[in-house]
Length: 471
Image (tube, one colour):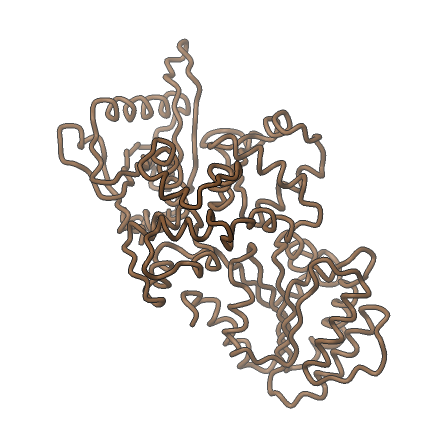
């Protein structure tokens, strides 16, 4: 059974109903459910289905491709020496098919692109010179190496330029979709527990399949990550190696960004990591961003050249915080409950969840129809300018000249504002107005788990958003 993905399923269904061929590219980070979506959409019935080999050379890739053709009922007459010959065998398979629509699914296409293999040239020839002239071919390609698929296929400047007919970007599940999955699986988890699991794994569907009935969230996390034979104990090692051919520099960037919550600009990354300043660094940052591991953002009112790079992948952040040093206790996570380290992490993880659910925050504020940009902002202490020094992790900067300055607070009960909170909010408003010169109205907005205690300091907040609103 498939949860969510209604828009994507509708696209995949619609393209089988007309009288023209389609070339579809599906992309998204590893474990996001690309293969599952495509198989479910077509009931696991394909004219041809193939997946590239993760570490295969050209000879091995060609052998497996022809083996997939045989498995689909084709009869290659000779061993293919190159991709042009291999795609000729695919054409013959399609010609002999009696299916009304020939659904061709090539998974992990990037792994097939070995050095000097001319795979893309052969793919161009297959599509431009043959399949696109027919009315019955649906070619679907996908790859976990998102940056590769974007540059080599979707945004290709050569023979595949503008040839993709549909592009599907598969994103993480939202909290609401994870709740739908939990319900469908018969798991007895409330929204607080779903939120806790989300803060560790995000909305990556694959990670949710490991949840077991009858166990608490803490017990599940121990079983999944910390037990002796935990299924995801070595996940970090494979996560980046399966996407990037030479993952060492990528993981070095990740490790560097893991040290600073708000992120770093390019110069700070170079200084902290020792990586050389070059076009190759730019490319690797772009690739990590396109795969969803980091985000690039411009602080409100600051120049684009000072863009910040921030690690945002939930599992990776959790790994560096708790798994990297290889704790030996099999019930490690259960033992950590209510410790200061966990409580600090909960606050930071909750901020990330809020950043990923801005659409829901806007709905609750009643501003869904108003154009806005989401920014972060910071300033250093400057006595001469009268700046206290502030950091705002989420601002919703609206076209109607209002800024919702969001304070994101994880709490096990209703959040209780006090004199310190009141002072901090007022200083942030002062710093933002003074440093940026903005004339926009600034609305302090609280995003918290269970709501706000009504006391003498509660009035500092114009709006209150709860976890239920994020679902």
